[in-house]
Image (cartoon, rainbow, N blue to C red; front, side, top):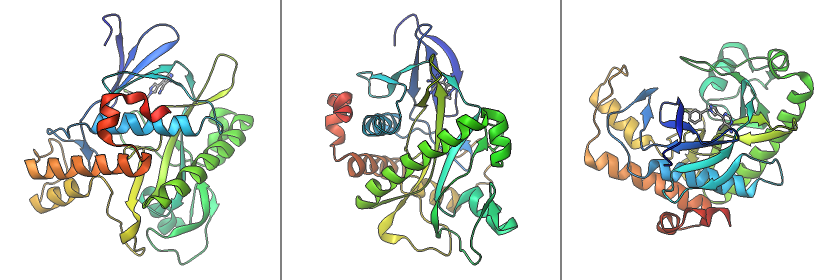
Length: 287
Ligand code: PZK
């Protein structure tokens, strides 16, 4: 990292530094969270997998929407990005009924104002993907909001374009991933505005931390699905009987190495690129 990079923000598992007035450095750590708690044990290369996947998707979705990516650093975990004015909403797209979408549906029959057919089960595929904007909670959980509230936050003209863009991104990526055996049940995008007022895709995109990835070969709606990446960690935590409050448990070596393998497998399946080739030259994902 350059000596002059000033730390500006921390997420649960990543950091942002300021390079200059126009550029940020996003650094993805190997930290992992489960049940909303960051665990004391890291998953080696997890940050590289996420950075590589984001770069891969940025390169393949440029025709749908311009993005903030300027370069991937040789360490494989750091992204140089254009500095934007971020929109104050999370742009969630759901193709399947899971997480808070399932909770809202079960309680009210709808989510973010989308009236859904009756009789849907947990993890069912939706008749068509839906945009379910959410607030950016500073602490605690993002809250699904109505389109009216979202329009208030970003302006009605931006909201219509944001919805069109994120539905197109989801349609492209979910079809691509499904052919490679991965269901993208839902995913969260973040957009910002550049100096000309144009919408730009930012943050991380279509990674296991910003999405629910399910292995397609065992998909069975009617209950929760196994997570492509974190299932070993969740199962271990459940077996321990941990109460899911901080601090989380240390992970045994076997859970760490199985989990690392799952992250690397997600990377290789989705990109078609060997992870070792990424480590040798991260910008292979951009070509
Ligand atoms: C920005 N975050 C979330 C990400 C963290 C926090 N291109 C951009 N321009 C201006 N701001 C942001 C971005 C991006 N991406 C993103 N917060 C600000 C975030 C990574 C680590 F700690």
